[in-house]
Length: 135
Length: 135
DNA sequence: AGCCTGGATAGACGGCCGTCAAGATAGAGC
DNA sequence: GCTCTATCTTGACGGCCGTCTATCCAGGCT
Image 1 (tube, chains in turn blue, cyan, orange, brown):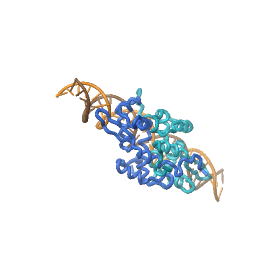
Image 2 (cartoon, helix red, strand yellow):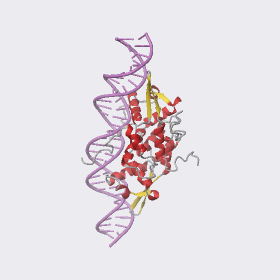
Image 3 (cartoon, each protein chain N blue to C red):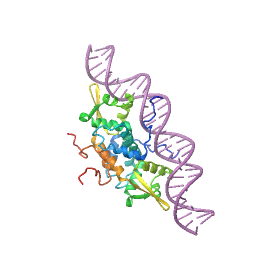
Image 4 (cartoon, each protein chain N blue to C red):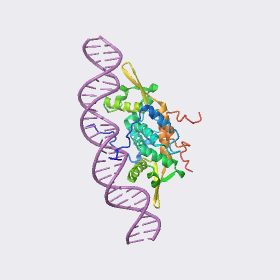
């Protein structure tokens, strides 16, 4: 019971801090070694994206007319129950990837572009998009 | 037991196919809705990255002199046993994110830039990587 | 007010995965 | 060939997470 902690996520980082922590590491990840806490925050956001359903949700929302979609439209795109979709949307929202607002009867979701941009620029290997630049 | 499948990963996609599947969706994710199989493949790669230890491994390898690092150097950077690090390296290797080669006694690992680039361009919201890009 | 619909929450269940200890394998050097 | 070191593999354990059912909350309508 000393070290064996099951999984390496003993501490959950709330959304606000998360932003800071991820920002703290805005160099391309492969430029210099990131800190332990930056890795934790970054992994938290990536884990939110690392699910087929949530990826499709992000894609559906982003590709939807006006960049917004209501839950009813999203739910019908899957063979999953509405609570399950609601759960996935919550995960994405808590990771700062999407935002939502209630408008009358329906709840609308849209992407937070900064979140995906941050991920993209972190993963971009320095010179970025040099398909074969390996010397 | 008809639908309840525990998690949405009934089918594992081997590395070769994975490349194809992820390539099949090289539009920025938020441009148009991705297919179910593309989402599965993409999620598989993201899940490999969505772990603090593996992120730090990628970062350590990428930032290491010469872009290469041997396992012994990586192991000492963590409070984890060597088999655990080896396991994480295997996950990254099977996801196509890193590659390895044995050189005498030591095994060296390096990044596969195309993998991270692919991820970055998929996540980049259309205009992509505004932080430093020309515009 | 009462009902209906869209959506979120709570609780439970089962599989996946991160971790470790122990053993196996591959070169290097004697 | 034997030993030693570096690394991988195997098997087991425990927690996390994706899914469901059941229930609750919020608005609109009559």
